[in-house]
Amino acid sequence: MRPKNLEKEEAIRTIALQIISDEGLENLSMQKLAKAANVSPRTIYIKYESKEDFLIKLFIEEVLGSYEKAVLDSFESTMNFPEGVKKIWVNTYRYLIQNRHSFALLQYGKSSPLLNKAFQKAHIQQGKFFAPIHIFLKMHVTNGVIQDLPGDVHRALLFSPLLDLVKEYFDYLDRPEQIITENMILECCEIIIKGMIKD
Amino acid sequence: MRPKNLEKEEAIRTIALQIISDEGLENLSMQKLAKAANVSPRTIYIKYESKEDFLIKLFIEEVLGSYEKAVLDSFESTMNFPEGVKKIWVNTYRYLIQNRHSFALLQYGKSSPLLNKAFQKAHIQQGKFFAPIHIFLKMHVTNGVIQDLPGDVHRALLFSPLLDLVKEYFDYLDRPEQIITENMILECCEIIIKGMIKD
DNA sequence: AAAGTAAGTAAATGTTTATTTACTAATTGG
DNA sequence: CCAATTAGTAAATAAACATTTACTTACTTT
Image 1: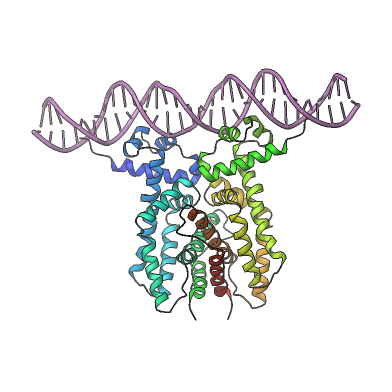
Image 2 (image 1 turned 45 degrees about the vertical axis):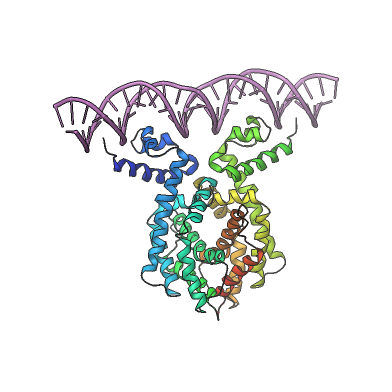
């Protein structure tokens, strides 16, 4: 049998992320995507059942998977507090600014009901992402290093200001008079750490 | 001349927010909207030039405007630190959980390029929202109460964890075993405040 | 090297899209 | 009270949409 052309498969995903990043999820159509990826519409439907199926897989496998891997890889060097948290912030920041198009779809995970549902389903089923984060934090709660807080509060503090600053980073690329630097990310991280410490 | 029927105008906006909240911005069409609002498609085009024009006005005037008003109204009682910050958090939280459908479109402001551009344009032009916030913070920096930080960092700390918890609040409505409470919002706010204080 | 098979294409499907056309309804200034 | 004017409607338009049909291509296995 004729083997799949993996380059085409990747082109479809890469170009989809590009269109979403440039024009928005609202303006991604299967025909536009096929044309831009130099592929027949049918080719997309060999691998994916429908547009929704494609978007969910693109989001979960291509975008969320890589993002969460990048975050979790930060734990490799240290699980200390606050070094571990700083590592997460810097590594995540560096990963995201190198992956602008993935970040664009990641942002839709909080607004699009389709993707948001897929996100929740993935996390309820496996918990492979938040579980290690919560274990890390609970460990330092038990040690008496940081305050005991609800998991959702820990999570909100650890990720949302960082993602917000990355979004600003991209927005400022068209306006060179303003800029987000790695130093600012660290400054913000220090504030969060200071707030979390028990005393 | 025949006067405009303001009820119809409001129905169009209200139902648009409902559709966006339930099905996503990707699934809002002018025909679907007209039908749901019990109105001819042409009626929408009397007030709005195009779909994009409609979405931008819905976002800026209906959603962003009310949200920012709710935040700024928090300053009425006190501009002290940290009381002012706590006021912002609680009032914003209360406003948003009462305005689920507006919140849904607000979230798209960070993902949809169309709305994100409109958001930036509105803020660059007027600065009516962030200016008072920055003045409030700079005042307490000058007083020596809080640390001096870049405006973007202050903003990320002040708003993004809060919005994130509100999003979680809505997500948990279908899963009663988890919940976000006003107390958790305040706990999170306390952490941010503690981190920001100069010592 | 030919048969079998899945990958891939181009073109077509019927539907839905944003927007417009041609018309009617309702109100007010004269 | 009617002429003028704008609000509003129902139906139509052409383009774009997701997906499929009918077919060809390229590779593996025998």
